[in-house]
Image (cartoon, rainbow, N blue to C red):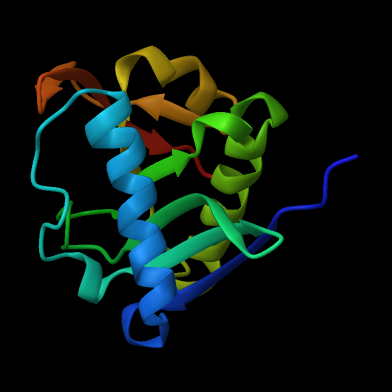
Length: 153
């Protein structure tokens, strides 16, 4: 039996140094090491972002960040750096993370649309959450991506 994942969000300056360490460690574990992608993860947007953390028994296992309109996209808020530790992916935590991130974004920034830059192979995953493709596929850090916008519910 698994313990439930606790999801919560914080502004950058509310994060503890331990939480910040764990966020960067998880992002590097998946985006740099697992996906073998050398890129600049720390991009100057973290300070202005809202950070969504998913923890189980005190261990960070899922994460995303919410970016206000204008930080990534001129017309949309964004959810980015959506990640679940590999050891926990079989439990559908990614779906919980995306659902929580959408609801948090709507609560923090009502009456705005949400856009993501999705890895192309995850298109169907995000379509389950009512995202639809917006524009042509593109390469980001050598990985095929597609822009997707959340349909209003």
